[in-house]
Image (cartoon, rainbow, N blue to C red):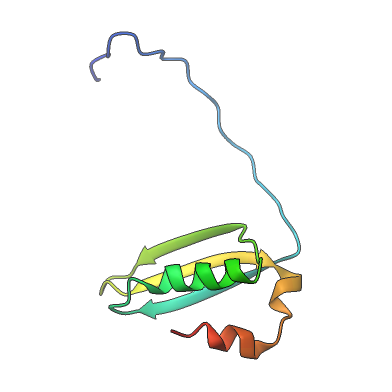
Length: 89
């Protein structure tokens, strides 16, 4: 199969299970073209409002547009929509 590296512990760690966290709102921003600064603008803006992010994912699609998805507590989503619109860089 492969070669063993000297001193490497081959004990396998079992990883599994499902993490459940209710009360979250998922926010996605799609087709961020040619704007690598957008994730930092969004995260900085949320941090200024003391809005914690449960997790964040940033991907590129087939034409290399950025897509960003993150989860926040639902109570923070209920802020006026105008706040979220101001994050539009």
